[in-house]
Every structure is written in structure tokens, then in C-alpha cells.
Length: 113
Image (cartoon, rainbow, N blue to C red; front, side, top):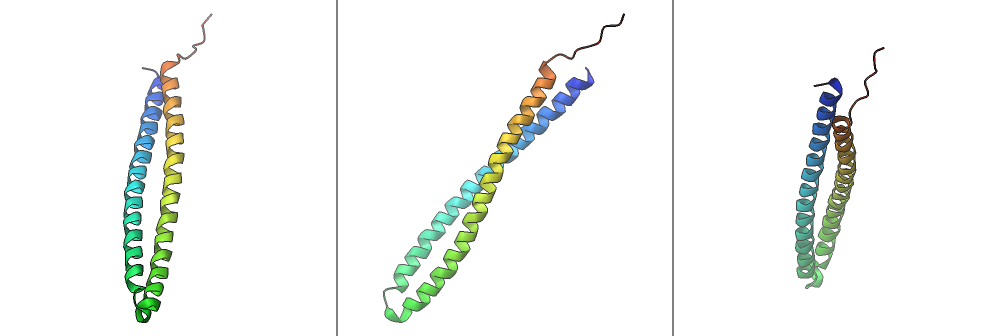
């Protein structure tokens, strides 16, 4: 087996690893977005409970602002990792294709005279 084919196999395997990594990151982002959504529901419920009494309304608003700030940070992090997963997915396909081409396309050997 030639050096070119071995290099193609290594590149192909590297591309597959990148694709699996992108898939794993996307799964984790989806899980995180579910948790963020559940937390937003709990914050909304807490806000409604604290707004029932004028005495506790200020406390509820303060807690809601703090929670929304934290949730906003988590949403930004999720957006970043989702974007990263997309870039990895594209790069993984490009590298996998390059490796497959190195394996499948025969090399041109010079003819000896």
C-alpha cells in the first residue's frame, strides 16, 4: 500500500473523528437548550408568584433580572457551541472527502524510459 493511500486513510479517519465530535457537541447543546427552557419556565412561575403581593414584587423583580442575566449568558454560550458544531461539521465533511479522494484516485507514476 502506497504512502498516498495511507495518508488518505489517516485523513479520512481524522475527518470522521471531527464529524463525531461535531455531533456530540450538537447533542450537548440540544440538552442544554432544554435545560435553559425549563429554567425560563421556573423563573416565569416564580415571577408570577412574587408579583401577587406588592410587598414581594420588588424582590421578585430583582430575582428575575438576575436569573434572566444568567440565562442570557447560557443562551449565548449555547449559540457559540452550536456555531462551532456547524463549523466542525463542514470541516469534517471536507476533510473526509479529501481523504476519500486520496484513497480512490490513483496516483500517477512516472514512466521510466
